[in-house]
Length: 255
Figure 1 (cartoon, rainbow, N blue to C red):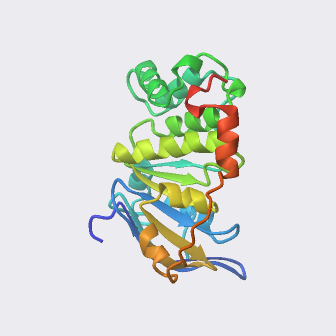
Figure 2 (cartoon, rainbow, N blue to C red):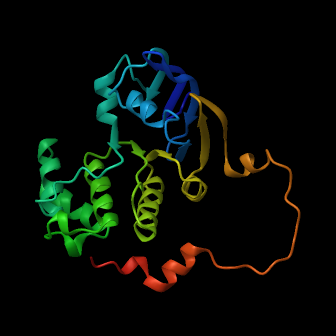
């Protein structure tokens, strides 16, 4: 796909005798959410580290935002943001101070204005001057993603961004990811949660034993199985629906 935001061909990676990636191929369209779904140890994080130039592949090629990962790593780094499994915020600093610090490190003009815009965009303005250590898990993750967007990278990697979060915080992160894609950012999301991939992704690739065994839209993947038998049963609420109904509206968080 010539206009792909991310293009991966035949990527392989081994650690001594452990073959983690065995020839991975996929493309990600600009402005879309692409979910890389796999169990623990499937190689998701290894692949993200290769695409973000933190690790060299043993074989294969990859391009991000039109730049070869091996040939133009500096250009790739300027075009991406990477958010790992654990929020990389400074808990001693306030939310605003975290954002201002990153903007200054990137030598951007008007760092405070950049911080204020992101605080408003991620619904953190009311907590801007509180220490990040007092934030809830969802707020801390939103701040982490906001920090990673300073400089407007066209591609963002989210490596299992909801690991360890409660149901409310997960939904907050999901809403944030959807907003990113609506704004034109390309999102590659790794996850082991099937409902997360189903809820968010435009396309889903299943990584198993080092290779992509299926890649398609949710509708295309569902067609791989025979149609379910139609039965009329009383619908029962899910545990998540019960939890959210009991604790209230996630959009009114003030922690």
